[in-house]
Length: 69
Length: 69
DNA sequence: ACCTCAAATTCCCGGTCGGGAATATATGAT
DNA sequence: ATCATATATTCCCGACCGGGAATTTGAGGT
View (cartoon, each protein chain N blue to C red):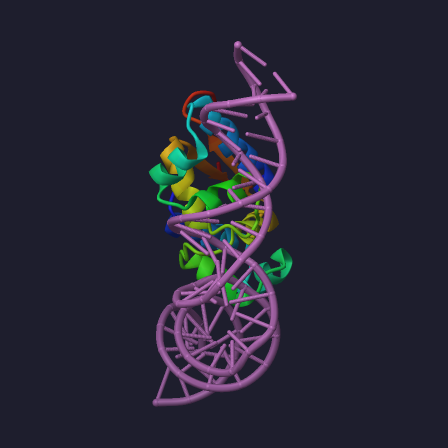
């Protein structure tokens, strides 16, 4: 999973929900510019805000370790 | 999933693999201080580096959208 | 108590984030 | 081609990241 893939996923999910970037940004508590750069795959976006956006979209994040599930 | 939870998961996984912070940091291409702060749950860590650390641990990241899987 | 090694904190400081607003560009329908 | 709207880029600039090295704190063992 790369920053670019995460950005694309966020964009696709946002569009599927019929949201504008400005609407999702406001709902997530981030700036519009941040969301634009996040969707573009910026690797230096801060993780807390990225998680805020994903949560606003209703996305669940799973991290699978190599050993256990 | 919060930054704190991600930090704890990284720490647990690292320990399970018998790695020191300095070793994982080197293997991930990040600084020691960054890893320390990441494990402590710093919400401003940059996502690209966080993904680098997870990849070095062999963790896979999944993002589940509310509609599709 | 003492020693060892892991983990956490502190230092300096160049580099970058990211907010809001304005502007420019792209996308799409008619 | 034209017009409307979504998305992208630029501006300034205070705030914060994060590298390496050194130091301090903490946990375990004997």
